[in-house]
Image (cartoon, rainbow, N blue to C red):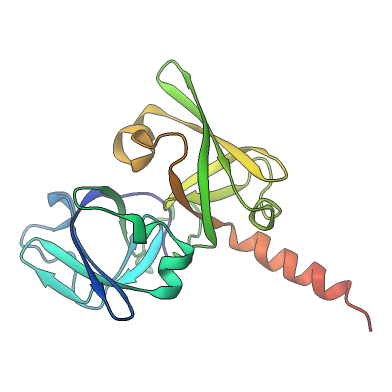
Length: 205
């Protein structure tokens, strides 16, 4: 479980194709390594652009992950290139503070940056998404974009908008995203359960 509060920007060191997917080598920022590089251990869960992956190897100051075909088909991880920035978040400890919203790290699908409107230091950003995802969004509800917990401003049939403060633009990948860029989308888990319940109640008996 995560909160959608990005802890740091990592950097892709290498992408290594494997028979059943892809191995990603990520260099995290020094702030995420701890004093002796002990903040992350083998088997830990890390959100990379909002996608929960398991640390399978620690190479000096880098972490290695494996992404399977299902993950690559539902996320933007397969398009990552060396030196690309990625949002990183360690999993939430049981006694941790929930500052964003409940983010599972289970990406529902991808969207595309459609519009970037700059309003001084702020940015209003629109994302185009499949209608199946847009149905789970409401104005003032929560959504995770590339693992960033954001509040939906406008929710339409196949797109939505968010307002990005200067801090978010500085410390996450959204500060460098351009129109047409692909982003990972995870809708609010509450919306998924409500949709499931409503679908069940309308089923013929």
